[in-house]
Length: 495
Image 1 (cartoon, one colour):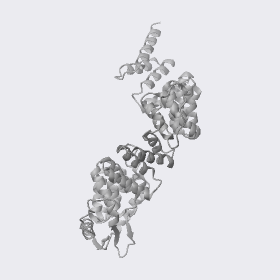
Image 2 (cartoon, helix red, strand yellow; image 1 turned 60 degrees about the horizontal axis):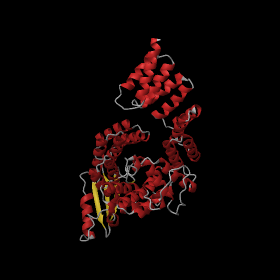
Image 3 (cartoon, one colour; image 1 turned 180 degrees about the horizontal axis):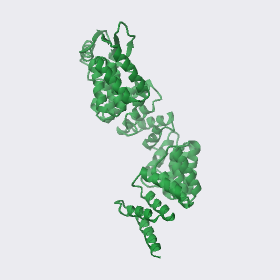
Image 4 (cartoon, one colour; image 1 turned 30 degrees about the vertical axis):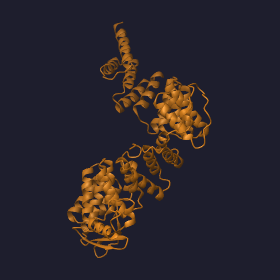
């Protein structure tokens, strides 16, 4: 499955789940006579859509309700009452033992958790459990805190204990399913997510996660059903359209896939999924069959209505195969129709840069920045200016890229290279040390650090870094430059 669809818990909303999880997490009734009461209901209609293994042609409603009662109606702690109606099972779980000391520890733990102090929160919940090991609230919240602390095994154990005490604590099942999805244990994820949906069939997060699991397990009909359900619940959910599009694409249903990908783009053209959707569209228009003359300003036919994104997709494919002129031609045609698409301006700049046109690349990157300010765009503009030996502009753009969070080794190297050209050696050395700290294998940063030390007459430091380059196992033309600089240093020392 595409990494854009299932690239970890965050992408599927675990962080947003935390926003409402550090509380008593069921539809609890108010405490009365020192009791805790949790209620839940399962409608047969909520199972029909998500579990054909339980709902079969030969199983009547009475048998289904009995299966549900056996599965969720038994507990060793507390009291569970189950009532079966014509089309639903209603559950009521009661904990008679509520200990004030444990409740106070629980409140303290919640306070710490809201401040993201999970270590202290976990300590309080463990103490609460030692005082009253029968309360599922403590295990549930401790499980979430352990997850945040990246202790997944403890998280799973606490959440599984939660549902062993109170089988209808369905949010524990949802989070277990989400954790197992993150850990790529898809069969377990499927089981817990489906069970959480029994109790809450209108939770888009659970269905979204389940759709991802079905896609990964190649259960495509079930995946299609899940994503369509999400769209019914939330018509502007990009991830559902993207997931649906990926399944259709795998099945070879190009038209349906493209419709889904275009919907992703329509909902939020600037979102990260829009980029993946643009690339995923399969061209069925003239763009894929037209022989493009690889010249600047190549003329392309007018774009048919509804096929604009085909041009971006074809441009991206051309870029991947090293045909930068063709990709640039296609991106330019796209921009004629959508001049406010920063992603395509950026892609055009990348094509120009690869094709050896840094001046045209800088113009494209500047147009992308007019639409939306992004650190990545400033970074690439700095590179384009560096190619043109426009040091002041390269430094300015590198500085803005860093300010916007693009603090990578390449940006620091570009910044420092141009500081060296302006003879600002101390500042360049500082930036290059940051570049190497970020990526110890950045030979360009190491080489320019040696250059800066040479220019500032710190020859010992310079030669040390040059020998580091020469001893590297990486094949790079920088090694030739390092050898040349070493020869120059040696010659000067002999004079």
